[in-house]
Length: 85
Image (cartoon, rainbow, N blue to C red):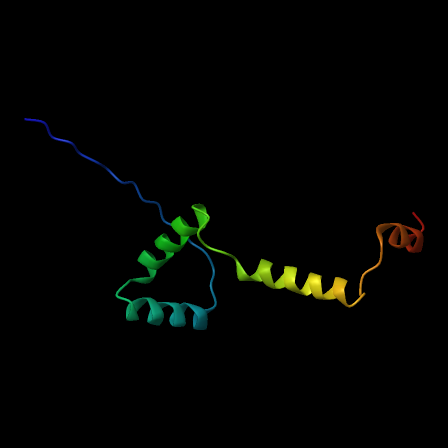
């Protein structure tokens, strides 16, 4: 008879979060049948696997594209000239 045991080790992560954000996340997770801890684990796994996009970066890229399109940028050479470099 062969027995196979698997052991999953967990660690505790402590971080700061706005209390209103935490409450909203808990409520939304609970609505989907998850604890906040289970949701955070799923989110971390998705982030590591590259299946989650960080909207903040996307927003910055969109703003940068708008700046370029509207001419609100200067060339590197002009910047260095203005800085006296």
